[in-house]
Image (cartoon, rainbow, N blue to C red):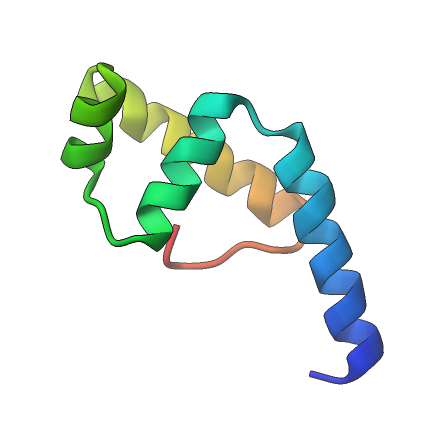
Length: 72
């Protein structure tokens, strides 16, 4: 990726991250750390089904922002 594209991508990520709720930030951070959906749900005290719904919505937001990644 060329430097201009990399800078644009990083700005998109930063902008999106600033718009996330604290739960979404924790979810994303834990996913990057390798936690499973069940582990994240347990840590946050939220039903795993609710976490899956949040993941779906977060993926859609990432995709719309042009920063969708399969690992989320």
